Amino acid sequence: MKAARPKAPTTPNPPNPSGARRRKPAQSRARATADAIRDAFFQLLAEKPYDRISIRQVIGLAGVGIGSFYEYFSCKDALAAVCIHLRV
Image (spheres, rainbow, N blue to C red):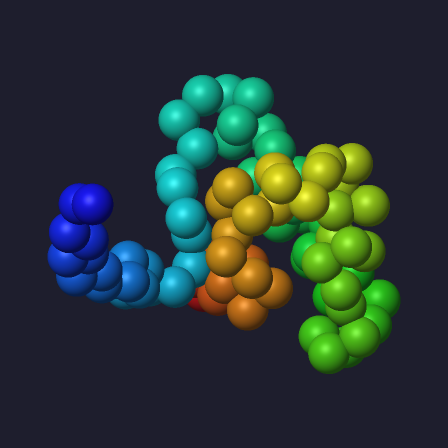
């Protein structure tokens, strides 16, 4: 019978310092996807308050999948932070 190997200590991934974007889109199609998500968010924000906007509404209006959203933004707050940064 083999002795159990000790498990290597695990550390969680360090948080994204900005908390805003997971990766920067490098190709034109990727940039277009991130742009569509941001544009949809701005459009919804013009229609209703922030707390009434869901990620599902954003991706539905943008015409992208949920995976695409999370490829570029970690959460709705991160999307808002990027949008604020772009508009200021």
